[in-house]
Length: 281
Image (cartoon, rainbow, N blue to C red; front, top):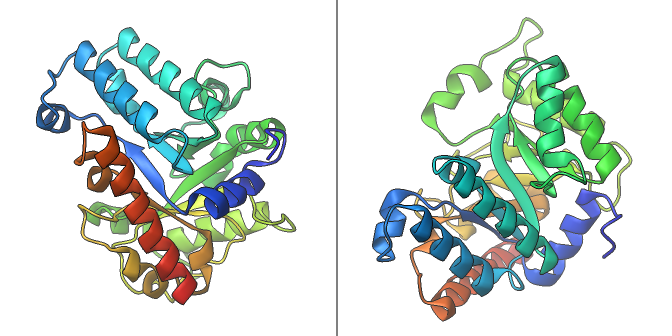
């Protein structure tokens, strides 16, 4: 698959060939300790290198959580830059989990950080927050289109606090979350095999049949594994849109480390379980 192809097309190919799984790379202090590593830059480097070397050529999508690297300052960001480059060189797709959201030139600068092809942190896609208004994301939408990258917009997140905003109802009777899904459907109109503008929709939310999840784009679904959702839950939660779901597993895979073989086995098991659930839907 050519790197010139839009993100949606590259994602569809990666999921079909490597399996429908996104592994989160979340080097928080407790996980470093579980691996026998110190909560310092050396521990971060060792953890990240092990994950990349074990999984980069096997897993379809990786989602580094930027905050866990940023907390170590410039040296932590340098570790993240190398991980992004190495993952992409091995054929993995990188979704940078930074949840950026702002207005005007500031949003444009965030977009250039992650979506400009010449940027050190250039990623295949970026998570963004639309809660300054969907229109505030226009610099990121435009640059993603120009760069062949993608976005994942927070729509129906798995944290309990999210409902306060996302389930709030507008004057037209639509919820805020449904409104965001509608914007993404419009962005993805006519794209094949899948659009590049996705939504973040929690796998732990239960019945979402009142929402139109078939946005012709990917649905990044956190919550599989340690948060309580299972691959078998996906058809019930996502319905007809389940084939475009990108289930994210972090601790469920990472707790198998630091043994590389155990990491590969855990990732393969989750990918197989997701594929079986989707095929049975």
